[in-house]
Image (tube, rainbow, N blue to C red):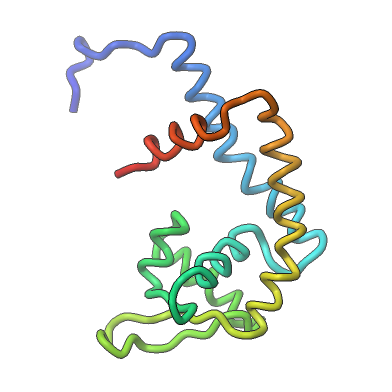
Length: 151
């Protein structure tokens, strides 16, 4: 732990950035979820899980890896996959290489839901994010966020 006497306080720009980032992190998932749930039976988080499964070979991932790429705990991912499984959008099976691990697999119904949900998700993120970035360097902003997200 750092010694309190050597800590340099945040300057006003850093403080403003930190507070704005915290607000975005809290608000954005709620507004996207609200938009998604208004039209579809899946949330933004559930949509993100379907997207990640659609992008990998055989449309399956270990639950732990899926949790990691979605920024969720394993127990949080289990709850999300349980909801998707109840709608037959995802199934789970034991990993053939490791009997202790579970795989989440995208089903045909999951593909159809993903295709149906894509326009709603796209409209939501355009409205809540990209419409507010006009004149900004989006590539530079993405690089900043990737630096923050790096381990």
